[in-house]
Length: 388
Image (cartoon, rainbow, N blue to C red; front, side, top):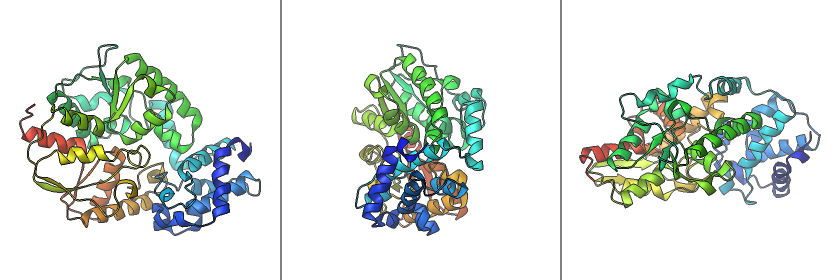
């Protein structure tokens, strides 16, 4: 198989070679840490062109380069040709696997876990309902659930993050909203393997999950995971024609607007980190900020690079697994930027961002609290007595 089977990937590489500006390097978080030309989007496009033309043969070095990208799209804002480098890199990974290259050893465990357990965290299916222990949570029933809360693998299975889905359920109840959960029947959206280029497993997970989601016949699907949100909204053909897909920040924003949630005073200074999948990929910037603005006494101080210019946390696209040390450096750089605002807390809206930024805070003994937006809002509403 040649590069002709991936025309969009080759088109981006060819356009990059005509431009040759290298502007993408300026804001590429991985290049900023590694300072290797081949790690930059331009260097990767040179490799893509050489492989697709048959000048080069795929090898382990090519695989390492392909999987050094965070798919964050930050470099695309600096690209004078406005190329979709993240999409091309995702296709490049699929291309290399189609040429018979094995996955990186670090990624094999993720894929095997998804094949064996249906999640990337090597947890049994039954573990998906562990986070609801002690909650009066009901399972989704077809045609009787207007809102389906799709939790996602990471929020459901990482014990350090389970405060987030619990907070969102708490807010739904305080707002008088009806909702349903899939619990142990929830299927992985497939985002992890799609970003790795493993199209076969992704297609299997997508078909199974799409069928499961549609069987509930809910009016809307709400997820607090930015990766799940991007995947369900942008990568599932036709799903959004039949059901509304909302990120939790959009959903909470609507509840606040409707007066169903009335936060009480929470006097503190915070800064907000835009997750790549929620921000640059899905262009959801205002909803989380409106939620924060609805909390009396809370002051939002923006970082120098925010909204579409926000730096990546370093935790996406398989990079944290394959390059843990570089991933941590990317996260620390972002954390330091947050610290310079003088805020007491760094708020975000993605489980992987919370994981990465908390690791950065721990490694540097930072006093900055890293929290997820639902948790912060629930704290404000709880302190207000949950009055509607």
